[in-house]
Structures are given as structure tokens and as C-alpha cells.
Length: 62
Image 1 (cartoon, rainbow, N blue to C red):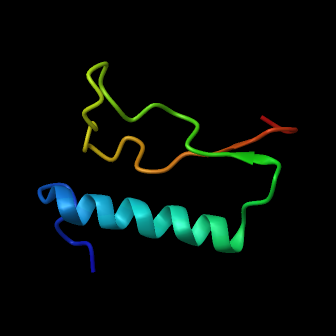
Image 2 (cartoon, rainbow, N blue to C red; image 1 turned 90 degrees about the vertical axis):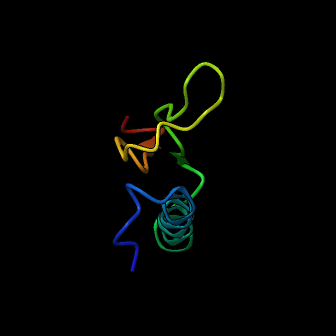
């Protein structure tokens, strides 16, 4: 599952969605902001390098 996410953009997007959904369903509450880090170039294109593939910040604890 998701073995080729670094070479397949569709699979990368699916993995990113999976992680985000799992976080939202199991961890996130109103004290979390996600995504925290920018994962796009200035023109809006995703980096697609998994650095990071997911990020979040706790608003009280930073």
C-alpha cells in the first residue's frame, strides 16, 4: 500500500489524503492547525518529495 508514492503523484495524493483523514478522525481537535508547513512552490505546484507529507501544529503548545 503506497509503495510508489515518491514516483506516482496519484499515489502520493492518496497517501497524503489518508494521513490527513486519519489525523482528523483520531487525533485532531480545534487546537490543531494543519497543514502547518507549506508543501507548494510559489506557482502552486506540490513539492511531491514527502518533506513533509503531513504537518500539524498544536495552537497552544506550538
